Length: 230
Image (cartoon, rainbow, N blue to C red; front, side, top):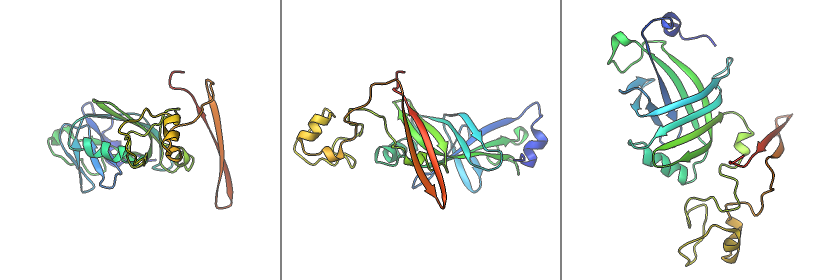
């Protein structure tokens, strides 16, 4: 894929500034950048935040990204809405990433020069982990039908739902706490909604293979599951 003209002309400059532009495809999309000032691109304002993009790979023949990892620091106006969306069940959404080349001489202009933004890839969230400081999103190919078939959660014998009596759990009884075990879920008659595995094979790795059809073409896919500590 040919580079945009401004990038092709200036990529050898001794002084230049490049930043990530990230769109999180939620119901109300979030636009973020690692620049220390807002960047306006394609009529959207990308808000400054502390973020990192690692391992982003693009297909040279299309805009589809092959995956990567996006880490977002806690805080900012986006933090609570994003965590609420994920915890509420939005477990897969598109993440678009661009590389913006800014003309240093024109700073602090918020708009990149014409033809100075490169689409790095359109990806889809595969997994999310977070603590009090960071949210890390593992990204995979947006158009890969195999990834859309994988459950978005940890593989565990304990229930992995984050909220007891939440939408995923669905329990409406009188008990106020839960130890997240299959036995407890069964005793409370809520085992049909259990968010874990009754048993996990005790091996270092377990392959899973599935088949699907698109049109008249048959496909097969295989993934290898490994315990986190291996």
